[in-house]
Amino acid sequence: MTPSKWVQDNALTLLRPALLLQTAIYHFIMTVLTLVFIQRRPFALLDLKALRYKSFARLWKYNGEAMSIEMPGPLTELLSTCKGVVLDIGPGSGEILPRFNPNLITAMYGAEPAEDLHPGLLKNAQKSGFGTKYHALLCGAEPESLIPALHKSGILNVSGKNGLASDGLFDEICCVRVLCGVPHPEQTIKELYQLLKPGGRMVICEHVANPWRTEGRVAARFMQLIFTVLGWPFFMGGCKLQRHTKEFLRDAGQWDKFDLEYYGSKDVVPFVVGELVKRETLGESVGNTDDELNTRSPMEGRVKQRGPMEQSYAEVVGELTLKQGTMEDAGSNVTKPQGESGVSLDKTFAEAVKED
Figure 1: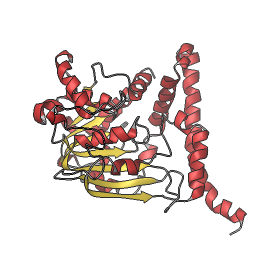
Figure 2 (figure 1 turned 60 degrees about the vertical axis):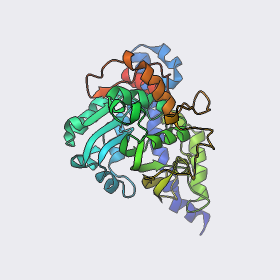
Figure 3 (figure 1 turned 90 degrees about the horizontal axis):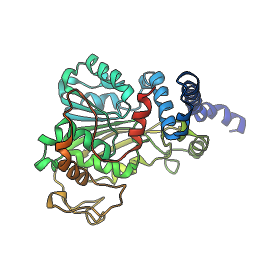
Figure 4 (figure 1 turned 180 degrees about the vertical axis):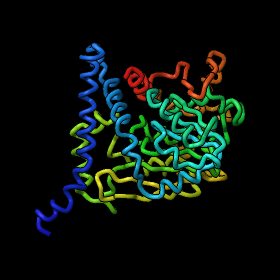
């Protein structure tokens, strides 16, 4: 094949993400102009982190629905079979809620850090037939944000022994286009694993680093590097094109079923889609064992030896148990996390979009 023929056949695929990056840059510029000339808050530009997430929220509000029309692989089929108590990480405005069957679901908790997206989220939940089954949580996926919101919702107070949920909380956890942007992805995924009941299922649809060594291609991996240098994470709300999410999920714990397949493996934005089933009976770990993590069981009153940015699920819950008396009642389906759990990237995101 001649070089010109190769370029003709592959240019469109390799450059397709440039259209989304261009759109994101446009919304960033419009966010800056709005702050300076309409809201007359030029000093808000000094908070670069808040500015980035504010512009990404604007991007999603205008384009999220169109970006959710077609989803890769068997995602729709997997979501339609979700049942029991479900945790949906990063539902946005609820564009994928129509793909669930509310008749199979006992309760659904949507962990969405962007407060501006909550009205649309609750509206789509009602349109999809969830009624009072749907609970929107104003939080991210990381434990220091998610655990306080779950406490506030009341689910941690009634599930598991002494509020620690040693047997897990959720029958299903859904992660759809969200793990690319969560802070501390390895630790966050491990804590989500702890929230899953034995025998529970994770439904996954995430874009990942191109698998160029196996079924991908070098050109697509190279373009991931190029788009990263051009500012993809900056303009796309912290989204990382080169995350090895499949490996993070595999190492999170013990699985009876680990079925993740690549879709669009030769593209610049390939996806892994599938389902993972947590082992029914947890024995000696084949992945992240307690000994490997220098970790002891939270139910035995022992603590992980980790850094300050890697608080475990049990540690966060333990702290919140002491603070539970100071937390206000939720009072509505939208639950805001409170307590001294620290400021996360997702909290900055929520504060930013609230002003939009």
